[in-house]
Amino acid sequence: MTDLVALVTGASRGIGRACAEELGRQGYKVAIHYRGNEDLARQVAESIPGSKIFQADVAEEEQCKALIKSVKEEFGRIDVLVNNAGMSIDQVLTFAKPADFERLLDVNVKSVFNLSKLVSKVMIKQKKGSIINLTSVVGHTGNGGQSMYAATKGAITSFTKSIASDLAGFGIRANCVAPGFIETDMTNALPEEVKEAILKKVPLKRLGTGNEVAKTVHFLASDASSYVTGSTIHVNGGMFTN
Ligand code: NAP
Image (cartoon, rainbow, N blue to C red):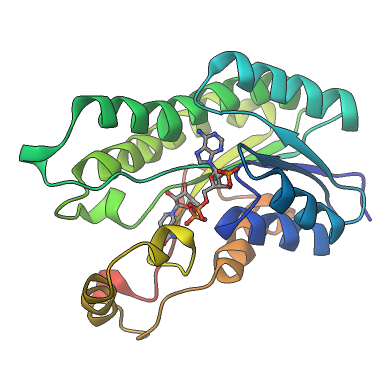
């Protein structure tokens, strides 16, 4: 095990869980964040030596503050922040509800702003750090029925490019990983016909796995990507080529 510490938000399931497990295998001490699924978060922690679980609703600024404070107190440092927690509410524009859009902005965008800002203070003192934000293929391509969600993911992309510039002088890198369609609770909720339509757009002809996203997250966390900042790596089975 190294002395490096990674905080992964939304690590109780799906892509976040896979990221926590991969970083754990690579020797990081992992702060496993969850919102509601404490039992699942505990299960993840059992498989990662030296890890701890932390609860917060990342849509709330005060809870973001408490989260970063607790992780810093517990581990003494934070080398990697993976802003993975997120949600989707899908609706065609005419029927889209403003309250749903507000919620998506709070959960998907304000959380990334608050946690990145708070962790940057810790990383500046360390003169090193890596922030990795989960966006989505639809933040780049758009997708009918997902205008609200796509807008939040597009916002994170331009935010990340901007903070990469703000933080580069302090040895801190910031990048995005943009998954395509990955097998998780989020995509399991889609109707079968929607899944089939999606698969037609994927040249590799299958959904991706959380672990395939996690390998890319680990690359961006590690010194193997020391000259990569302000970038997005797409993990989408070739969807852009179709
Ligand atoms: P998921 O299976 O639905 O899991 C979402 C995670 O986020 C859970 O751990 C959940 O915590 C946490 N979370 C949700 N709202 C939260 C809140 N307000 N405060 C704190 N935590 C919250 O999602 P996923 O499919 O793994 O997606 C992970 C990320 O990848 C998201 O940002 C998503 O937009 C992005 N992404 C996913 C796909 C895909 O195909 N799956 C594609 C592109 C991008 P609890 O379990 O405690 O509720």
